[in-house]
Image (cartoon, rainbow, N blue to C red; front, side, top):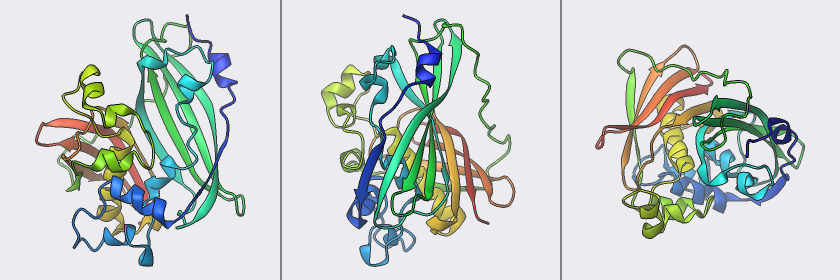
Length: 286
């Protein structure tokens, strides 16, 4: 059955409220690879509650509505949905303890054509319940492989290009064999990331790392490379998922300076010569 874009745009995704403290901040940081080098002075404040800094990408797992594509009666072939892109705009740095509210809505639907799928664009506004101040805007693009050809407009959101020159810098984001096991305690209990049998049925040789864990690991590398480890300097980040990372792999992040406070990036597992995140942008206070 073809999807109804008007129905999607009118969908009411339940708001979510959540309390967190330093423990959740540190657990998330461990899940994205912080602290793998116990002598990395830029990493340690993200895992030490006595001088805590909160990873900006932690916002991506706060007050999350869960798998709304499956849980709401939207007529989607949810078994064939893929998280295609993710971005965030930071309005205020996260504190080490807060109560937050997330309100998610579908903002656009694009038709790639029959047998080509559809794109659903969703946004989540994260606010601090203490004062109502906005903390972050989190944007997600969902690729619905089985839902194209409904007669809607095509996508008008071309991704930012990767510069056709050598990168200005390259840094590395390490993961550990336990990264998926740790990250799932912060978000996403999908057995694809822990059960070898499920991973094999999905066509993978072993469990894969969560895409959003890869997003966080790359973000942490960019915070250190572009902001000297200061999360308060981060203004935004976005990218397109192009291939999974396996726990234990090291991701090389190539960075191109694009002017004051802006960089483009591409993330690659060099050992397999596979791009895992493409068309990336990173904005920060220069």
